Length: 138
Image (cartoon, rainbow, N blue to C red; front, side, top):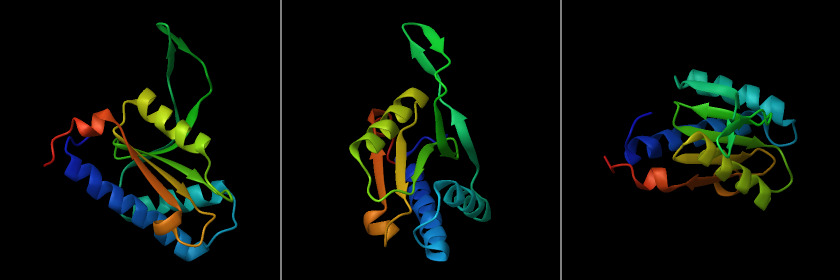
């Protein structure tokens, strides 16, 4: 992972741009799995490295549990992206992403909902944690 806020912020801009492009091409109303495939194709076209359907390790009192917990996408080993295709985002979606960020030691996460009219204004939320705050600015 690159270790500056500037790098993470620029990467965030590129990721949201990929989501906007997918939404522009497809619009709302499809399954999350369709958006995920198109989104990762767009990440590839932009030259970004990613991993999908990553198993999230859950350590509980020193024991690693087989919790069958997976997140959608990690971009450049720096930002978690959770994709949704729902009528509206709920608090549980945000809580889930924040927990993934904690468990995976990632400084930033983006929640993207393709079931909206405008990804930039209403279809994405970005979250940071103490790891992000500890990164140097440049």
